[in-house]
Image (tube, rainbow, N blue to C red):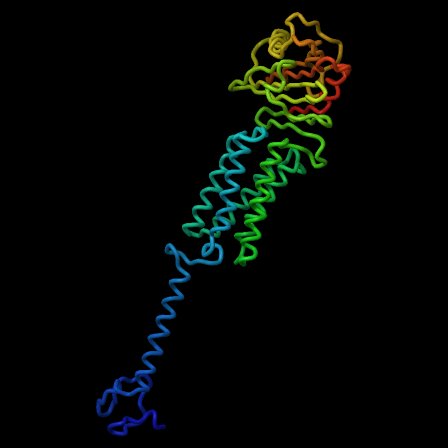
Length: 353
């Protein structure tokens, strides 16, 4: 073939890629065909270098997740804020354990890891979101259908879906909107009543560290110490004890629950002290009414009348594990409902673990 002949001596064949004739040593660099082939090889090497630069960032290979981390990291950061508001009690009062702050740290760290593409960033994000999904489900075990818990579980599920496989731009930005939306809904549900049940009418108050759960009647909700006053008082929180207020302020009904892990006084004296702390008189006579079933039938019940004329009942008892429990419900005048009747209705929703 003419292409394999040496233009000077006619030697043939010329080996592929040869830069000079093997017979006479004539160089081929002046030939247009040789120059064109050399340019093509250089262009291919440049394209390969560009492809390698596009798939490496921060020393690690990139995919769709780490090449476009912005929307995913934003969902993680929004989740960190939502968990901080929940665990810190800034909004609502689910009284989550302190170790739940780890979810705040987890979301923040994973967002930074994705932005900087550190290590196996996508694999770490997948593992972290699986962990958060499991923890959110565990924290929801007392009221699994409560909207606030469903919103936080949904946020973890959306974040997980955004880091699985190679998400398209549609999946990334749909996840950004959906993940941010459910996180915002979770905070809203915290504000209006963090443990509202699935039907949206009954609220359940849960204190995992102190071991109580209280399902309130329709229309009742959690109240602050200030909202209880002046009709009912509640002891100040301590290192070993804490309480929660609740009621239906529109109908003048108020209640409070107190649990202390290390009460040391005798039962009768301890109950009298708690009774005074709730706003009752120290000489209030015991009542023949049975205590709430959660106290195991061993508690004491006292008639309760506060300084504003609110009337109701107060139950107190010491559990087998040493915890002191105080539970009070009153009805403020001019409401005609019997305070003791309301006390029984609310007390039926109390559970102690």
